[in-house]
Length: 578
Ligand SMILES: Cc1ncc(C[n+]2csc(CCOP(=O)(O)OP(=O)(O)O)c2C)c(N)n1
Image (cartoon, rainbow, N blue to C red; front, side, top):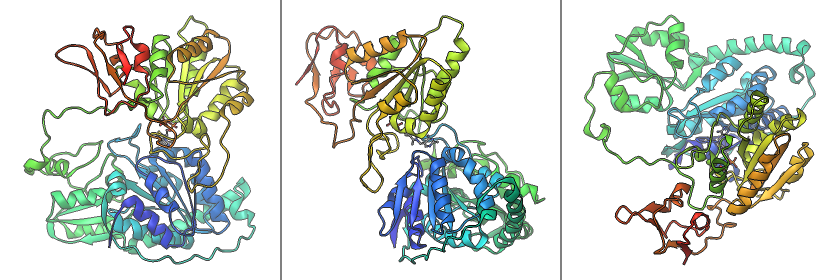
């Protein structure tokens, strides 16, 4: 028995099933799955530049007969959707499992979409564990099932399943013998002539999947008090057990296709039937669509956000225990760029230059928050550059502020490259700042093509950003140390002055948490010359605060990393290094 997180358990299950190849792109809450898989004996794993590439690598590996897992967060499924839909047609060679980890409540995401709708639309079966033991078992079985039904399986997890550690029983690995690859265009060449045949075949495969769902042991019925029955899945099952301990429960481990006959029987067996959904009506709407009558709860559940036992108790008019009451007056803890973060001065200077700043997704999204308040937009990975082009097109005939896109190195490799190619190819203008902090910071320091580090530490070459940008058609390219205020200011001024051409500034300096490349220096302190002007505080460095009594600035020497950014903004020489 071992305590494993859901993500670790999925990796273990894949390994036990003889899965030999793992691919993905990091994203909370999915990231640790591939990191954990990569450490196992006898497997190959790689981070890909984005989820679409990862899924295509997986489809190729599966076609060639290997068992393969592809991991991503829910928004990654959007990126991978193109191959996903057609992979349902081709089916598989070796078994293929796609992990989509959803983030209800948006703990670290830009939306809370429910990945199950993708699988539904793509006609791909969905398995949904409610704890780590199920995550292990479902993942382990998924490869054989995928081969049996000739279709990729999608495992949907949510934050609580992916991150909570629960007792798990790992066992040994059964090596999978790769099926020999045999050329078969009618299965793998999805041109209309062949795709039409596979579309018909997909329906036949679905007929068998529906029958399987009725018998599948992942769908379990727990009969208790027959006065109330609840249909639920995943982490919600744990909340239901907490809040409604006497209720009979139909725990769906397969959430698509639904086990119609079994659900109808459950309806017969209980007086009142409820569906408890989290953040989307996926289960209730499809249970209702089967013609199964669902009773109304005394109260209502929140239509969005993460569910909790408390929310369920309230919906069923129950007392909420003291420990689950919302605690008043808790101090807010907004996220902030770290002390010494190399992104900070770029935002400070972009605001100073009164730029319209289209942002992107990464640590640097935090530049949107006060006191920097630098960003005008953040939508999805890569959008900074394409949105800046849109701004430039719309404002072309007017005098306007400089339009600047800000994008991280991993995000640039993910989908900024094609956006920049578009602007350059269409003779667009504006400035793109690539914040190259030598890592994929936001998701926990994964390697990426720009820093040349691979998941399993294989030797590779680092992408030459400046050369790539130049070859995409940008002539005005400069490289700047973002910790140097004057150089940063000058570069932004020069790049944005030329309104008729596209320019790129590569701001390169390591993330302060990269202990092998960032060297912590002696901390800074405030001397007696401080006038309390607040200039250093406006940088939003968490190491700097205002002394409530004296009004002057103070530096917390235990969090200061000695970057010296603040000293460059002090007009009174009041910040010195110890
Ligand atoms: C399509 C998609 N995939 C994955 C993520 C998760 N994610 C958020 S930020 C980020 C990486 C950011 O790295 P980088 O661009 O290098 O910026 P940094 O955080 O280092 O500043 C990732 C992978 C996401 N939001 N969207």
